[in-house]
Length: 449
Ligand code: PMP
Image (cartoon, rainbow, N blue to C red; front, side):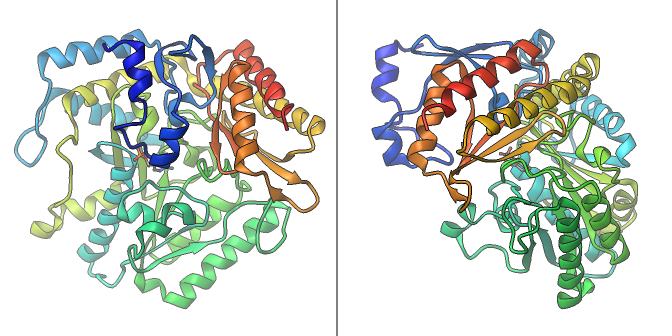
C-alpha cells in the first residue's frame, strides 16, 4: 500500500470517476476512504462516519459480514475463475442459481441469468424481452416503455429507458422506440397533482394512451423500479405498480421490475414487487445480492417466459452474456449473502429504522425552510429535496448542496447528493442509535444554509 502522501498527491489525477467531472475532481479531490466496519467508513483524514448511503444503495449487510468475507477468500483459493458460456459451469454457480430461485420463488421467478452488475442485468432483460416476442411469433414487438425519473443503469439499453436527461443527453442517439411515462413525483409533475393516488391515475392513463398510440403489437416490455431510487426516492401510490402490471398483461407487454435497489429487503419486504403485490414477468437484481462484496447482478424470468425459451428449438439460444456471468467467487458470495440476509432478517429492520429516518427527516423539514420535500417511509430509503424558496420550489444551488454535504460529513455522516436531493439508503443492519447519528448530522448540515 502506498503512503498517504502518494494517495493525496495522485487523488483524481489518473482516475476518471463515474458521474463526476474529471477536471472539477482534480481541483476539488474526492474523499479517500481507507477502511470500514459495521455501518462506518474511515477516511484518510481520520474521520469515522456513518455510511448513510450503504455504499451506493448496496452494502445491505454492512461492512463486517465475516461469513461473506470468509466465503470470498475461500473461493478465490479453490476456483478463482470458470467460464459459464455454453458447455461449462461451476459448483458455486449451481448452488447460487438454486438459492436465487428459492429467494424469489414467491415472486414467481423460475430462472436466473447472472451478470456482472445492474446495468448488465437491465440490458439482458431488454434483449431477452425482444427475443421472447420473436420466439412467440411477434418480432414486431421491439419498443420499450418506462417511467421518467427511473434509473436503469448506463448501458445503451438501460440509458435509453432511463428517465433522467442527465444520463442521456451526451450519448444520444440512444435506442429508438423507448418512450417514457410521467414519474410518480408528487412534488413536481406536469399535472400539479399532489395526491399520490390521483397522480397514479394519471400515469395509468398515460400508459393506456401510449399503448393506443404505438399499438400494443409494437411494445416488448415496460420496466420500472418499485420505488424510484436514484431519481430521488419517489414512492408511488400502492395502486400504481399493480395497475400498470395488469395493463401490461392485458396487452401482451412484458413487465420488468428493476429490483436492483428495492430487492433483498430495502422496502421492508424481500422484493419491491412483493411489497406492492405484483408478480412481474422478469426482474433485474444486483447490489444487495452480494451486499456489494463482489460485483454480481442477474436477470430473473418467470416460468412462462422460461418455457418459451426452453421449448423453442435453436432460436431459443441466448447469444448474450458476460465473461463474469456466474463467476465462481461471485456465485459463492451470492449463496452466503442470501443465507446471511435471511438469517439476519434484514427486511424486518428496514421497516422501523426507515420509519425513524423518515420521521426524523420530516421534523427537520419543520425546522428548516430549505427542505422542500421529504420522501420515504417505505422501508429504509429516504430523499430530502432542498429548495431555495418553498413557494417557488426553485431547486437549491449545487454550491449550497455541497456545503450541506460537507457539514453533514463533518458532523459524522456520509450522505449522497443527487442534484438538489440528499439521498439515503443505509445498510439494513443499522441500529436505532446509528440512525439518530444520521439525523443529528443532517441537523448540523442543514444549519449551514
Ligand atoms: N437499476 C437500478 C434501479 C439501479 O439503481 C442501478 C444502479 N444504481 C442500476 C440499475 C445499474 O446498476 P449498476 O450500477 O450495477 O450497473
